[in-house]
Length: 458
Image (cartoon, rainbow, N blue to C red):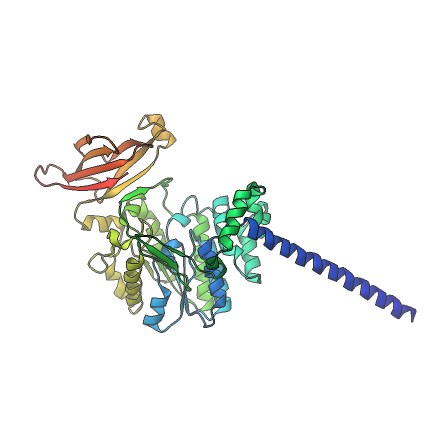
């Protein structure tokens, strides 16, 4: 009797302790959610993408993963119509291959995946963003952590993404905004945004006189704006354009996972406006590395920046929002072209592409595409190429030689000045505070009669 009483008393004590722990845990979760509501600045598109992914009732057959170039380029609703299969676009801004790997695993555990389209935009995979233990890569990956449902997959991603010093920031998003703890304006702006009906109903988009956008239910970002100026800020372009070891490791993990799970995979690069490719002068080193890995694993790889114009004439500013993202017309054209390619074999598709960017540029008529610019590097400033208050401008053309350039500048409110007569030099400097119009004339070397011109706002 005494033993029974002691057992009952001990059991009740254990229940009380468990109830207390449970209460504290629930209180902690509630407070955390409240703090996130007060301070967290959401990535709207990632938030909607994950919400709608979990709301999908039909089995998803194919997913597209990668950076913002994918959610601007691939329309899954159009692919659904054309194929009779179910597609979902799971791309997010700046998505690295570590993120893509864990997204594919999550999607395959919740669906019977038939295939994956993995986009391989170069910036998240080269020096800088491609170093996955650096803060920039870790913090960018939080958008694909914050909105996922709790699961073993999420825990796996949490510990793979975050190094120990970022465990708190990764687990408690509001702690990333410590500097705004007593910032009333910040708190007010977060509340104002999150009380909007669009936010509550997982809708995102805007409309202006010149453009309309809408983030659709299946992860496609519809955008009608047309690119109007061939001018690109290309900061921190590395000399080494090869994939980092981290990026290559996760590309191989993805390929091995898909092979093990019997999931078809297609590697590709969505088209960007050629000015951006030209700014990364050793681009062929990057795409050649991917080709070698694709051949090793026996999977198709399509770089749509190398597609031949006669098959897919996408290189026109009317198809782009900016140098990196297709607009609605461009996305419709690209999605339809991508579909047509899926009906053929890799061997049949090979004829559609040049083997390298160098080959593609030389196949075109000699021309200027625009201007890209960057801050002066320490070496450039030390050499006296420019001063610290100047931008280094470079004319983007499809020839490394053979062309001569004449350069005119018309600063706002000032007269036009010719700063260079015909010369092979492509580089010049402009004060950071100066804005205006640059007119570039070009001709083949020694040709005194034929010339072409273009204007670029700066």
